[in-house]
Every structure is written in C-alpha cells, then in structure tokens.
Amino acid sequence: MTIKENVEKILAELPAGVELVAAAKTRTGEEVLEAVQSGVKIIGENYVQEAESVYQVVGDKARWHFIGHLQKNKVKKAVGIFDMIETVDSVEIAQEISKRCAQIGKVMPILIEINSGREKQKSGVFPEDAEQLIKQISPLQNVKVMGLMTMGPRFGNPEDSRPYFVETRKIFERIKKLDLPNIEMRYLSMGMTNSYKIALEEGTNIARIGTKIFGERNYPEGERNSGSSYPMY
Ligand SMILES: *Cc1c(COP(=O)(O)O)cnc(C)c1O
Image (tube, rainbow, N blue to C red):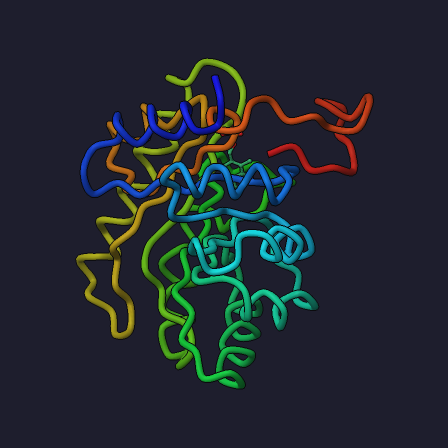
C-alpha cells in the first residue's frame, strides 16, 4: 500500500468530527508531503529539529502539532512552527510557552499530556495531578488549554489500552464540568496505530497515526526495543 492509499483508507474510516494527525517522526519531507497531498491536514512531530526540516518541504500546506517531549530550550523555535502543543505536563513548560508566544503575539492551544499508565520514566502528568496543573495554567495569557492527550502502551493487545483511555476521558469530562476560566475542553488525543480504534470507542477526537500511514519505522540498527537513546513511542 502507498502512503496515499493508506491515508485515503484511514480518512474514509474515521468518524466525522475526528481529526487525523499524521505522526511523522523519522519520515522525510517528501513522505510527509505525499501524506498531505493525499488529504492529511495535521502533521505531528516529536522533535523540533525534525519538524524544521520537514517544514522546509511541507510548509503551511498542513497544520503542525507538537507531540513529543518539549525541552525548555526548544520552546522558542517550537512556538514559531507549531499550531498546537499536545504534550504539556508541567507549569514550567506552560509558562515558557506562554512567555515565548507573548513575544510573537500568539496564543498557543495546548493539550495536557496524561501519563495514564503512571509509568515513572514516561512524560505526562499523573491522572490525579491533572486538575491542579490545569488550574495553575489557566491564568497564563498566551496559552489556552483545549483538552487532554495520552499515549497508553504502544505494544501488546490494543484492548489493554482501553482502561487508560477510559481514565483519561473521565478526567476530561470532570475538568470540562468545572468550567474553568480560559480552559476549553474540546480535544481528546488518544491512541496510535495499534490502539486508535479502541480510542475512538472511548471518545477520542484526535487520532495520531504514524505506522499505518507511512509503514514501519526504521530505527538505527539494534535500537528497537532496547531502551535506546532514540525514544520508542
Ligand atoms: C509515534 C507516535 C504516534 C504514532 O505511533 P504509530 O504506532 O506509528 O502509529 C502517536 N503519538 C505519538 C506521541 C507518537 O510519538
């Protein structure tokens, strides 16, 4: 299957109102452009540097979501490229995004990343800490919380992801009811290639899909599943 066929199939199957984010880490500008020309409207990038090089090819033909772990020293560049940052998990990073956005007259839509598996080494805020974090972010002028994002486990039986998605959706609903100032709970971004169908059943309206669009990723030799320096998402 070509990238074009993959994109068309996924778009035809996604329910109305669900946005597709093409998760593009390790892909070339040409591959990503093919996806965009086939109907992808949003690119998800994990690394600012990779996004910059793909941006050279794709530019404003798509919108850009940051879906990786954002380091403070990359925020200035990131706010220039991205239209949404899906992975905010601390007040410090939200403050930095807000500060940098203020300098360029932008309000950045952000999602709060939930570490729904409560895995120590993973990014994201623990479910029980999400509400407090959102309340702390709410006064910041140049960011706007628009929902939640979670990964869930990447491998294994997709059904095993369901409890993580259910828990994330519960937090979403609870925070939505609080009706906090400057918080608009609109997006749930859950699931990947192996689990997005489960995520859809549990209410996601952003599907982040990489492998099913572009094929298996080629990691540097020996780095797959090895706790490597190249993060396994
Ligand atoms: C890589 C990645 C995806 C997509 O993963 P696939 O299994 O290739 O579909 C989704 N979300 C995030 C945050 C990712 O890093």
